Length: 330
Image (cartoon, rainbow, N blue to C red; front, side, top):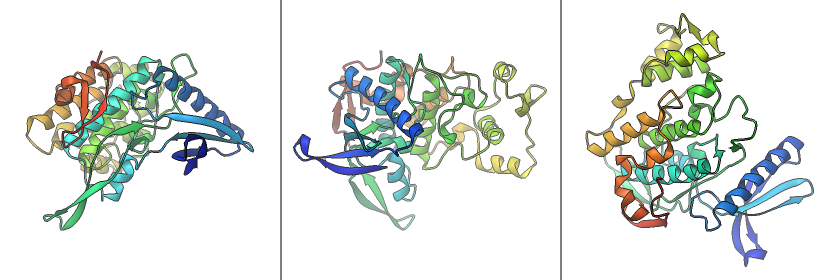
């Protein structure tokens, strides 16, 4: 549970207080999260890398409590409250740039977030203007400032720590996780690719709750799973003679066929920046983790060129909104 509080030790500033149940397994998870947040504070004392800042933590009658800077709506809640009207290409660019910057900082410090999703990307300020869409006959919200922070480090894992078999919320889960091939930082890149698609379209790319169906969706969108991954997986029950065991004529097969299509067919405009975005997403959704774009590579991608001049981010209106390192892509 997260509540808004007044912190009298910080001059009456409003903070977000995360309160964890007095249950040992949750308390242990909280202790691990605090350890990650302390490392982030130590490595980024000026909060330049866009990860939520922890102010303090304490134990209150067995409840672990963590206080954070107060942020606004998540990028998912804003989307939901806006009837799933997608973000503009400029907004997608700015949010994507910041997410890549923040998560690259984690990767550089031997951390994998493992649970990236629109719910865990929060706006610093989610104030909006309203415009009327005559075609759809409805009001639509446009967020004024697309500055964001990455939150929820409860599942973040250091390189040297035990890597649990399953990580990530289903829709943002990389193929190597589903196939239990082992995972590391590239699984975060896959999740970011799914997030950028969702911002752009307003709906989830992989809308499923079943592993086999999830893999079938991947094949429909990205083409066949590489045979090397199929040979190595312990999950041979999903395959037959080296191919995905999937009946395209079943009801599930029809669902996948009707709800998924090759990735490039989701492009909404022939403008170059739209194709650049999908070129970036394709690189992030590469099956083989070793061939997937790194976040340094993502930040150098032409889609982000408009934001790289001077090393500053800009929101959709062109306003400079946060100061980054001068060359954050190295």
